[in-house]
Image (tube, rainbow, N blue to C red; front, side):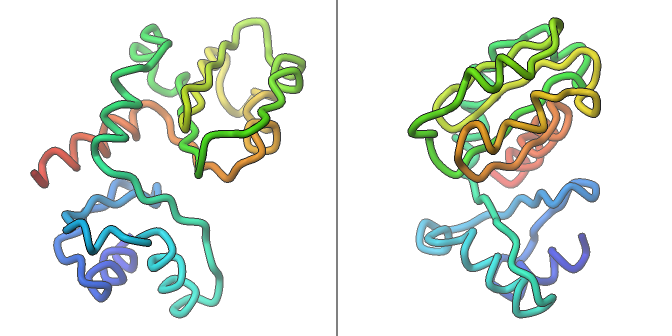
Length: 160
């Protein structure tokens, strides 16, 4: 994560903060700096490390919205059971039948525009549904558990 902070600094984003080894960072940016941010970070990683990851850059308002509309409030008590997939775009033709087929009896899910929520009380590691999310939605995505989402949001607020 120190390398990510250094990389962001070299891209003109000093003061970046990261959260554990999650690949999450918060930075303060101007509107102009935020243009094509994910692509610029991805290219910088490729130049430095020889591989090009998909990078999703989000505004704090998008994260706030995802937290505010969480349809599974009971997951807040057990943050490891609640996972959010942040999507590159709204799915044009999501395959909900495939997700329903893979869903365990205790699991529930909901898609809200560019965020997919999964409540998996038995654990994400045992979830067949979790394995199918990205393919069934047909868009690139990255997932985080509730604890990580709320911690990154706190970090973003501290930048304000």
